Image (tube, rainbow, N blue to C red):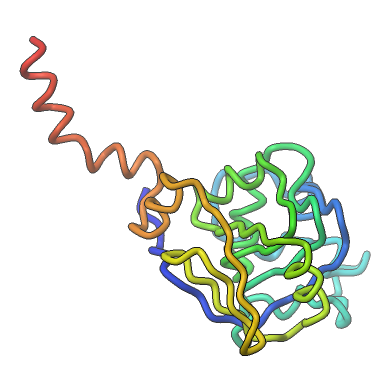
Length: 193
């Protein structure tokens, strides 16, 4: 599948300081009735964004997602823990979130995010604490150099698996990468017959 190429992103941040935000909070199980990616943004963090009657909770910072340049979510540690749900990164992307920054992101969420075009960024604890105290601050994430810059003087480095990084920079998912290799695969197979 073709994804939108991710080179760098400058955005204001939405801060959710809570630790252990699990995939059921990101996309409640009752919304897992589709395999379509579009439309899941409305269900992202549904119980945090809407009251029991379905009215928006005005105090929820998540209602800023995708608006006014708010495309980076800074979350507490152990973000994305819980069950494996590709719907979680789909919902965040559809909501307008393009990257998540934390000191610790659950491995299964990180894997699903990278395969679907959402950049998970793990930073050191000092940087993380600084970002948690800066809702609305403008942050730049540069995937090529694997750096996060903010506040005029703050910079932090992060690591992304080299294959996942290549796919994000090129705008392809793992299957799309394999499809790009099809001519070489066919040529190889000819010599094996």
